[in-house]
Length: 114
Image (tube, rainbow, N blue to C red; front, side, top):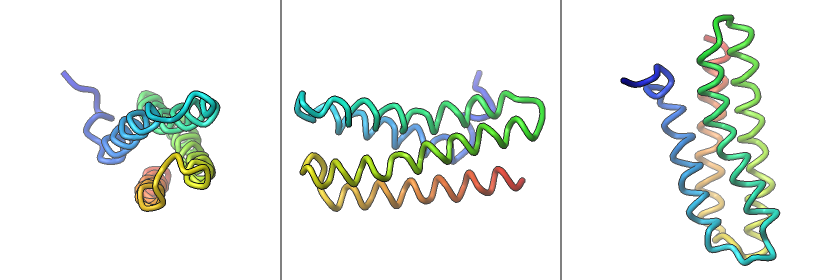
């Protein structure tokens, strides 16, 4: 049995980003815990808010959770930038994640207008 949101492409993409960022941050040095924690929380928040929003009965409630998910995706951007500047993540990897986050944001905007 699966939940409806598990079939959404945006949810699948959000889970993939959260999983990959979690793997990447495992190699961050101990002094970078604040970045590891914040990036992982923000990335996971995208998928969890998509899931929670899909459990709401009223459109306004669903849209609110999709907005929160979109905000979490935006939150990842400056954290990735700082990770790149601190040489914790390669520039190409940061660019690729930003591109994927942008795609997720666009998909969330589509869900909000649906």
